[in-house]
Image 1 (cartoon, rainbow, N blue to C red):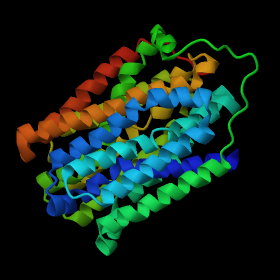
Image 2: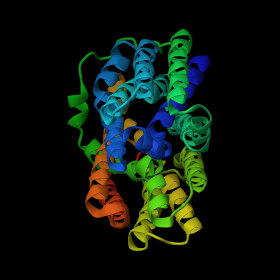
Image 3: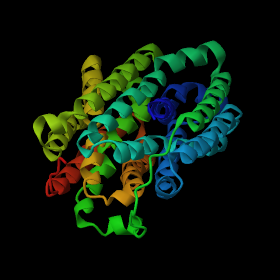
Length: 387
């Protein structure tokens, strides 16, 4: 099982890469096929929305078929998407490719969460989930400076062909190494996503799940490049460094969040305090969108770190799930989390198009600050559970 988990973690590295690599390709795709920042915001949003919509069938498949068949089969579709991206000549091709890649990546993290929930004690779920995200977030780092180097050395098309081959090989390895957890004897057969949606306790968690990751993922995956280019006139090398710093902060954030519920004896207040710090940084940038350039890098890094509490929120919600609906439960949470990112990607793209390069960023940062605050207010009424 450990070898299978290792394969899933590597696949999650690829998933993290694919959700963030468009930020580095903004310039070259603009020159080669005429893609604008708004176009790429829409393409990135399609990745997240496709990923989110897939969570319902993925949850059913994990509970019914198991992770061994589910995750590799879908990842092969992601490999096909990378091939389509490499052959793209229009923005429409890029959007189609991102939809296919979103389908391909949709089961990887949840397959890992499903295995953790089934074979390990509930008290360590947040730690294991955080470690998987933390290691997988190396893909976020690879989508920055290393990708810029590869594109410069080999071209973006050849780089995507290599990624397609790596993705397909990873799917094969996953199928060979993953083992499905043993099925529970006499487990109930009834229940569905609707069973979970009828649980009032989860509706105090869903709103924060919807907005928690949107700022960190949206800024790191899309807006960090245009922000430093438009408002600071930064060179590509500096933008790559800023992306690397924010990516490292997001990795660090997952490792800081992961054991925090056991250290402090609370999940609820770990999440509230962490996200409140992120809100303060977003509010500062909304009011003062052009601080000294390294101050901006530090603020974005803190936003990335604060928005990395996804595993703890999932662990909190998981404590309410019936065991036989574990797959559907973790994927339902992921639907809210990733769906929120997709919707905000498209919304912020429209904001950029409406307000222009100079006026959009205060609105974008302010939108993230306000919506996360609303999510926190609702979440504050939730019942704290630590297993």
